[in-house]
Length: 173
Image 1 (cartoon, rainbow, N blue to C red):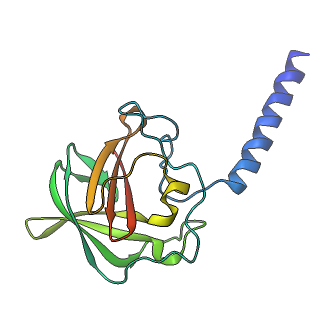
Image 2: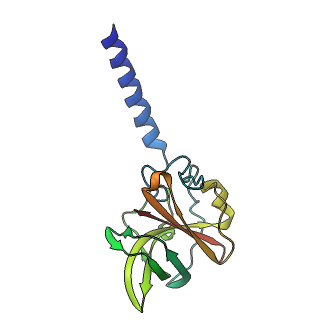
Image 3: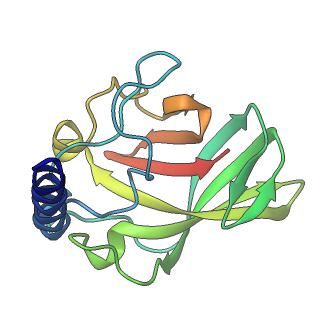
């Protein structure tokens, strides 16, 4: 009898996870393990709908501003040391395309220090009109940025608010 209950529970959990995986938001704004309340300041990962296809992102390369990364992280799988960087959005789209995202809403940003690119990472671009559907935390003020450590200290999020768009970058610590 115990085996039957255990098997039934496992089959039910598998079926539910499969159904959830088919409808879940799989874009890169929520690294695995970052859902829920964060250990430092109650920061939560996105929990809602991705931006619609009609959302637009700026064309070409633009400067997003200067940010201070308080501790070393991994950017594109390579170490990015703590420090202050100029962040610029590149015209290069991230591939493979994230499910549910418009082609131009997943792009690469570069972290520049001393005139040289020190690292790069994928950024998700979310229009101001849709940020409340994607992110529940308080955004940074216009033309500013904030860096937050997410749940358990496993991830760090860079959130830039510039020109009517929000730019979210997630780094593994």
